[in-house]
Image 1 (cartoon, rainbow, N blue to C red):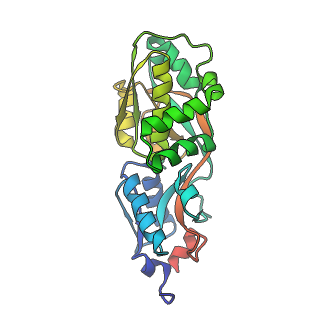
Image 2 (image 1 turned 120 degrees about the vertical axis):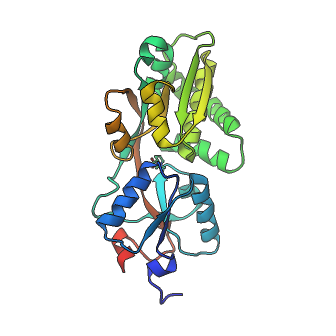
Length: 267
Ligand code: PBE
């Protein structure tokens, strides 16, 4: 119905993900900064969000989601970021690898691999799309590693194999992090580690790295998205390096929607 405002057409709803995600905090802030008083942000999960997106998209219905890049949704659907003139979502950032204090002494070879881990949006995209198309996470990771031996060799360059040392990686249930952690699990296993992946929300993830109950995570979107956690746990974790450049979060809509900016939500 073209006589409706955007707000009316989506019931003043932005489809969110898990409550601990940095993008949820940023979106609550956006609602205040853009004075979107009648609007609400719903909570759910990454998987529920993409299911809602698919459902709306198939019927060409309006929907506004909390979105991020890299993510397979941009490869499967024609989507666009809403402009953010107030800069609430902060533009491009990085995904960084974080480790617990003491990791270098206790597991120097893992520390080295994690510090050397760096790939691109395209690399991660291949793993994500394979999983989204029904491949098992571990098989998608295996196939990607087999096809990218040179890059993987850079991560393990100068590393000696170990004999069953245990390492625990914490990650969140987002498609981007499911891809990265499954790849790293196999790489560490090839170097002799016994790897446990634990899936938690973002708050518990940072707590686990800070209190040492997890060894590392590849899921630190900084300097903006996870800033609250990085500030809270300052001095209680080590930054091991940037594992991806040029990533981004924001509000995302299908291209068939006739709006371009977060400002347009007020109309
Ligand atoms: N995300 C994906 C995360 C970082 C990676 C955008 C859902 C977050 O909002 O914290």
